[in-house]
Structures are given as C-alpha cells and as structure tokens.
Image (cartoon, rainbow, N blue to C red; front, side, top):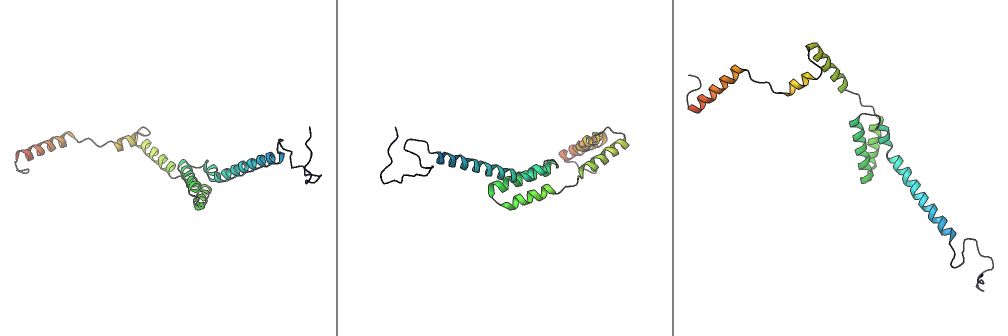
Length: 152
C-alpha cells in the first residue's frame, strides 16, 4: 500500500528523501563513507608516523630503540620535533666502533695464548693476594689489636 503524498509537498521528490518506515540510503552511505575515511586517514597517519622506526629497523639495536622512543614521545606529546629528530637519526648511519675493538681484544688474547673471552673473565675477578702478603697483613692487624707498635 502506497501512502499518498502530502498535498503541500511537490509531486517530484529527490531520490534521497525516503518514505516513512524505510531505510535511509543516503544516511547509510554517509556513515560508511565517514568510517572509511576516518580509518583510511588514521592508517595513513600511523604508517607515516612509524616511518623513522621502519627505516631504523635495519640499524643497530641502540639506534633503533632511540628512534622508537622519539617516535613515542612525538605521538603522545604532539611535539613534532621529536619525530623529525627520529627521522634524522634513522637516516644517519652511526659507525660501528665496538666490533673493531672486540676484534683487537680477541687478537691480543690470541697473541697472549689465552682462550677467546678468557681475558675478560680475569679482568673482572679481583686479584688474589699472594700468601706472603696475606700473612704480613694478618700480623699487622694482630699487632694493631695488641697495641704493639707496628714498626719495632
């Protein structure tokens, strides 16, 4: 059953005006378009925002972590200078100073006849006192406790 058009309304209504009780197609299209635009712009923004991190992913671990922290600071504080600093840091290749030093240390250990990495273990452990020095130290402590002069 078709309802009659109100007598005051024009006889030719635009297509986007719906009859009562029917689905408003224009509203549905507008909602879908708006949701798609918001999601699309959000994805583009986040993709652009993570650009420095994706660029620094190939770099050293420390450089990548610094770029990631700068990206998070830029995201949460809205200070764009952090993002620019992260981008510049991601573009710069930081020279590797540690590998040549490790190689030199390994060569020196090999020349000294030590196993690789053994020199680092010895450097961390405190040297044990010689038995003569330990005995002299005990005698000095005993004399101090007895009240006797140290140099008699």
